[in-house]
Amino acid sequence: QVQLVESGGGLVQPGGSLRLSCAASGRIFSIYTMGWYRQAPGNQRELVATITRRGSTNYADFVKGRFTITRDNAKNTLYLQMNSLKPEDTAVYYCNADLASLATTLENYWGQGTQVTVSS
Image (cartoon, rainbow, N blue to C red):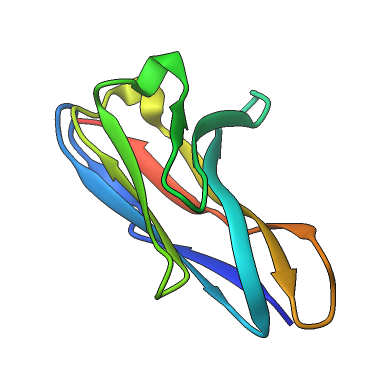
């Protein structure tokens, strides 16, 4: 069974930084596009950033210049470096991946989420 497990969330002051990680585990054959999404209370889940297996990235306008998405294909791990954090970045951050396991061709998976709170 495939799992995505996020870590690295927490409480940080405005202007601070956090680094989120998402580790994929299980009988994985290959991971394709991975991404980070977030959902604040009362809001819909929204795209933060995505990265292809080859490293091509895409960012939401509200994080451009502040967040950086990277991945380590050898470790099946996704990262999100978040700098210059603002109170409006407060949300649950979710990892997402399109991957093929040893039992399936291609499916989309979500992690359980990690809380990021930006507050003084």
